[in-house]
Image 1: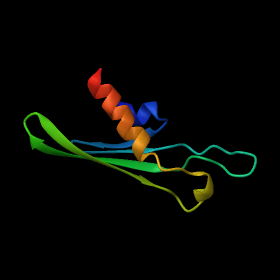
Image 2: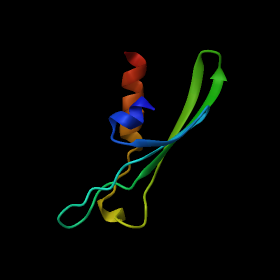
Image 3: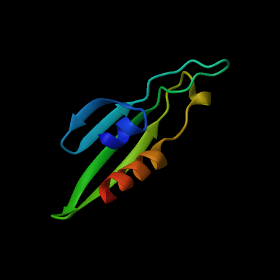
Image 4: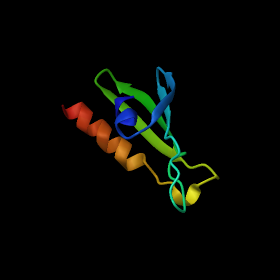
Amino acid sequence: MDALAVTGFDIEKSEPLYVQGFRPRKVGLFVGSGGETVGVWMNPISPDSTGVRVATQKSIAGIVGQKNWTAEVLEQMKKEISE
């Protein structure tokens, strides 16, 4: 959840093995950004490891100004784990 918050997402769902965030829309001069939804699925592999899958979903409205946040969210998760 922290990785989503740091990258600018509002948490919409928080379940034991799934977290979902929505990035608020921003209006720009030509194309607004934001509106993306990121899902994080966790899968326990062993007592000391967990598999993680992160996926970005873009909305139809504003898709031109939206981006894929998967790599940024994963990178932030790695930073938080190593701290």
